[in-house]
Image (cartoon, rainbow, N blue to C red; front, side, top):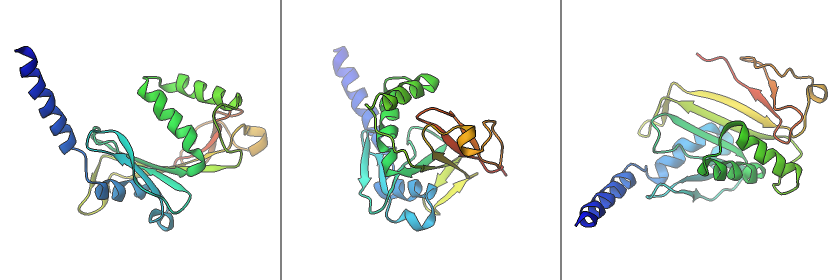
Length: 191
């Protein structure tokens, strides 16, 4: 008898979760806002299916892949990155699914790149990240938007780039210098 009560509750929970996943059209509209305007129309988009799984909801025609905001989160958070970064980003998502986070997640990916197990482009590749408190699909507007840029430059150092490794609002700086995941952070001042 207990299982007959639990089963309908699980079904209702699944239906409720599915109802919270926005349409592909809404997910795409929000996801591409992180990209430069001229690259939005041709970007591939990874969003969510009715069960909440990450899926490709639009094929791409250019070099960008955009990630839709997670419908289980209240804040808006989307990103677009060069398609050559997909193995690195995908591996990061796999590790998060295994509850591997923070420095440990990066250590694993950096080691896999160094060992030749995980491909990473040697030329600079860009990631765009747009966050906000919410997204209004009807107007296409993000509440409290904040756009920042990350330029991956594997194994770059302060000596090879001339950049500081100290975080600086409004000025570029080098994060994770000397590693496979070295990248230039550009964080404009927040309004």
